[in-house]
Length: 193
Image (tube, rainbow, N blue to C red):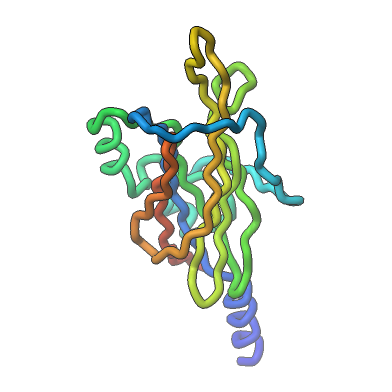
């Protein structure tokens, strides 16, 4: 009986499992704000976790593996992505979901979130963390790199979205920047042992 109790305490201390889902999109609406950031300013943490593999949510619930990408058939935000495409002025750049574990009163590892253009550049690059304490927080530090017309020439500009947001499970959260944005959702996932 003591072994069962200790085993249960270990799994409780190890943390809860979450499905994190993000849509990163650019906004092409008119704005009067000017941005002069031409260099990357993200402060990269000492440990950055890369997402790996693909699995269905059902497979991951049976055998959970942190930082595994979840197949698109198990994403929960197809509708918001379709709405962005229909609205005009918004272009989805990245849609990704993964499973990760976060212990009580812990800040998770930083998950590397990016999209490449196939030529060695990263139009979307940054990291995302979950902080679990009395409340759940999502920490996002992302940059979107794009070209703007400056007179008759093109200039590369880096837009940064750095935000710590208190979130509720299963709710869609919108993190805003005049040039790009993030739609995020975090849900608790029951896993088998």
